[in-house]
Image (cartoon, rainbow, N blue to C red; front, side, top):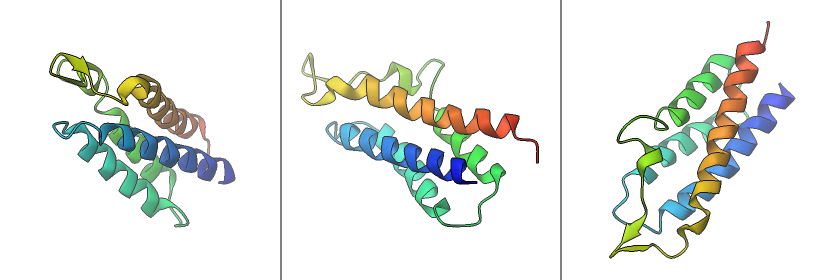
Length: 112
């Protein structure tokens, strides 16, 4: 349980960082998805959540990665230039994905 709490805390930290970066683009609709995920994650902190709730959260986070029109296709450009402050978007995005994937992989290997 302690490990799952650590993973949840890590996901929360990475989601918050990604949301801060996405806030630099007022035209992006992606921040709303990640804010919803962050709200869900924070609600799970300190609760007696089960593996299914964590897996559901992880799946929700990961659902926007991959495929045409996905978050992977998001280009933070305005007037032909990268929006200032978006240089770390890829790294922040990857951290969120990897944190969610770690939760899913842990839940897939748990034998309770």
